[in-house]
Length: 243
Image (cartoon, rainbow, N blue to C red; front, top):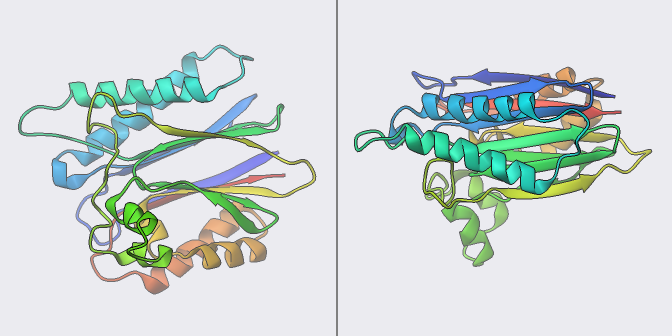
């Protein structure tokens, strides 16, 4: 059984350009997080447009048909084209986008993302996987220039290489996850304004202490409030439990 809880908060900023949705379906459930890039103008419109596009794709997808990574990639293409069509010379709106789909009957989860909004997968309380940030700072880690833990406050962390609205040919990064039976699975989708202040260790500790997805999210938000600096970014997250 899947349960979940999400929130979004403008943090110390004047506007909230994050957007998210969690939908529990009869067959396939999904969660989406997007973080509009304010420096490009109308980031809130871009994030909402991307999330709405994926919601519409789910609503029209034939019931009972299994998902594939190719389907999710096509949906991201649709979101990208829609955001690109709304741009003009003065407004180059862009957004990150992260999607988790859970097919409980088949015991399978699917992820797709662009940008640095992350999807974490925890198995029996331990972080088993999280998505690759499409950012300059993540590439610096690959090049051996910085350590992974230095990403959170690296000078170039906000310079993104792949996002919705950046180019015509941008392609989502996708993954299929087989959910091992008998194990406790949890997922976390979050924008960078969340994970920059909540470490993986704190995520795991909060998960072990929590008795529900809602409680897990509450504990992590408490960590964020302890660490966040004045003027902190918009922050949003969706916590998902599969039992």
